[in-house]
Structure formats: structure tokens, C-alpha cells
Length: 247
Image 1 (cartoon, rainbow, N blue to C red):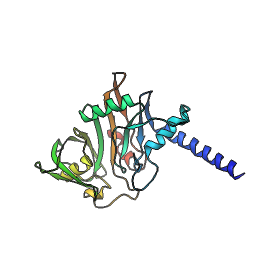
Image 2 (image 1 turned 90 degrees about the vertical axis):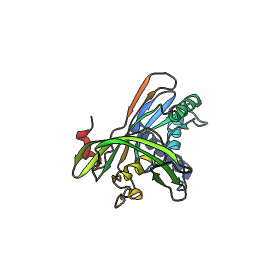
Image 3 (image 1 turned 60 degrees about the horizontal axis):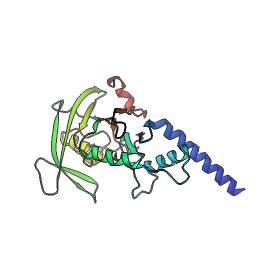
Image 4 (image 1 turned 45 degrees about the vertical axis):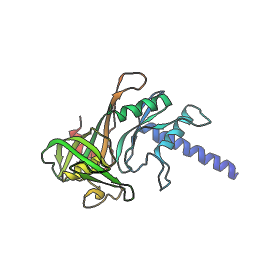
């Protein structure tokens, strides 16, 4: 009886997982799959040992396509745990290799939306820094000039709306450095809402920040056609304030 209940519980959990992931799938074919990541999810396993998103997606693929020995899934980029939005995975080794090359060679057009209390001055522009990450403290520091061990970071930003004292900022990172958007906006005196690691006065009770990976635009690694993947804004009682600015 206990074994039957355990099997029934596992089946129910698998069905719940399928339902949750199906809701969040933004694009899927034989080569790639894109998910609208929920803020708070981790992409790959860390010291918390919470189940990461890549393992959930593997289970989804294995169940959907009847792969009893498990499914291949390649992680080609990451989003910080408190960040929401588009996360792209490779379903084949060929796609993984080509996507890795595209990210490395800056052939991915990435758009983020960030919310800050302060209004950026100027309202649009380009930020260029050299960054060093402290892995022990998991924090990144900006420098105006190149220093030993630093990595160049560049992004463009644009204020696209204000409401209730908040500024909605569109960000296009031209490089992909750890915590890049977070620390570079903080250098502009625009720390992201909830991001007390980079200067916002208080953290979010949900342990999330108001940074959303809105869109990925790229050439499909196998089909060689343009792919545009957009992630809807979170429905959490805060992001709804900015619906009128999103086209």
C-alpha cells in the first residue's frame, strides 16, 4: 500500500511539473527550448541544493518524449536567481556548441527591463566599465578604467516610462558579465528595486529584484532563421504597474 501511495505521489508531482513548465515554455523545437524563468528559481544547482531549472526541464523533456534514460539539456547562459525572464537551453549537442559560440561572439540580441526608484540622468546612454567579481562575497565592483583581472562591460539603456515614483528602464547588454546590469545601473545611481546587494535600501520579501529578461533575438543555430522570443512580465502585483509601457 505504501509503495502504491509513493508511486501515486510521484506521478502527481510529475503531472504538476509538466503543467507548470508547459505554462512557462516560450519556444520549443527539436534543438532548443526557452522558458520564462520565475524570479527565485536557480538555473543550475548551487549550495542551497534546491532543484534547479535545468533539472526540471530535463524531466519535462524526458517525460514528454518518453526518454526513460533521461534527456540531454545544455545550459548556454544564466540568469541570476532573483531575476525573471527568458532563459534558453539547448536540446542537442550541436545546438549547444553553436549557441555557446553565438553568446561568446555577441551574436545574441538581449533586452532587459529594470525598475529603479531614481530617474536615470541622462535618460538614455551607454555605460562602459571594467568589472571584477568577488566570488567569496558574490558581488561585482565597477571600475572606470581597466585594472588587473577586470573584464570589460558595456550596455545601453533608455528610460521608457515612470509611474508611482518608479522608473522603467530598457537595458541592452552588449557583453555578458556577472551581475553586469545590476552593478552598472547602480553606478548610475539607479539601483534596481529590491537589489540591496547593489544599493537599494531594502530587499524584497520574495528575495527577488525588479529585473526581467524581456527578449532574445538570434539566428536559430540549426534552421538558420531569425528567432524572437519574448517573456511576458511577471504577474506578481508589482510589474502590472508597467503594462501600459510595454508594446
